[in-house]
Length: 150
Figure 1 (spheres, one colour):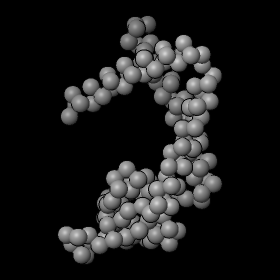
Figure 2 (figure 1 turned 90 degrees about the horizontal axis):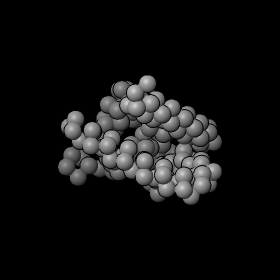
Figure 3 (figure 1 turned 90 degrees about the vertical axis):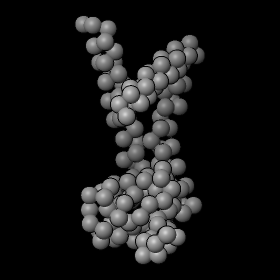
Figure 4 (figure 1 turned 120 degrees about the horizontal axis):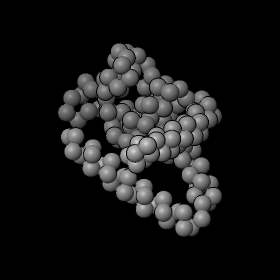
């Protein structure tokens, strides 16, 4: 087996392990909060983009504006999302997270990655340094290939 194939296999195995563990913890978080995947999707979009419209949400989820509006309305009632008037078009409502919504998403992100602390503690300092260097190289290479594609 070539070195490239070995590297590909190791990265694939790590990616699968990472995603399975992260998603297990995130699903537990979703269950604890009682939020659906679609609701979490909206909250994450707002967490990362700061603002968007109901029609943006509809396009992202592949649903009608009416369905997106209904979904957003529930999040507004829960106190996680607020609507405001678009300064350029009063007919359009911009959505953003409330402080409570932002706190919830930060809690979810933390829930998804808290197991990494346990993983780091299971490694010796020497192993930690080796992995830091390897992941920095891997990240830079991945970013370079992404930049080359655009």
